[in-house]
Length: 172
Image (cartoon, rainbow, N blue to C red; front, top):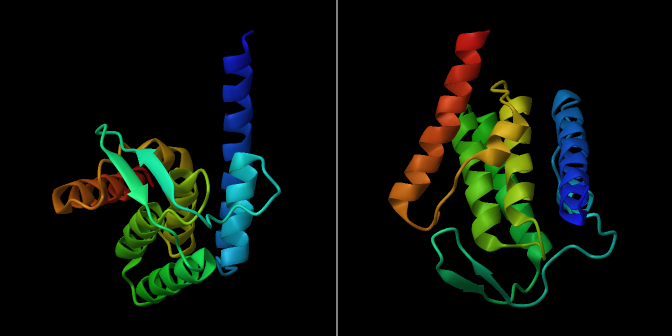
């Protein structure tokens, strides 16, 4: 067994634990708050230190494009606003839109030092499960996502999430 395979096993175990926490929050109808979001991020990354991003960050998108995210004055406020917006949407019956919106909002804001896409997928999973469109969290985590700043790629992501919910409904 190699170091890489052990690291991968640990990453999978952390994701599974984070999914359990997400599902528990949704089933018990607990609000997804910035504290819970940070806890999910800490589970995924395995870091117990401050997980919020307080500096600029540079990442490489799947397309190969390099993106630099500017400093966020208060990433918790940014995340709170996105969670509030998604909660309002879901409460008004726009569950799919809430799930897509929170995913894209968290990914594009890049509020954490690490694991932003995975944390966003967990938040999306929470809204879908809590408001009656449960899908596999692992399926959400495995969706191929491009540059969500581009309208056509955002629509493709929304279509993929909608297909997951349709597939789930067909199996019930």
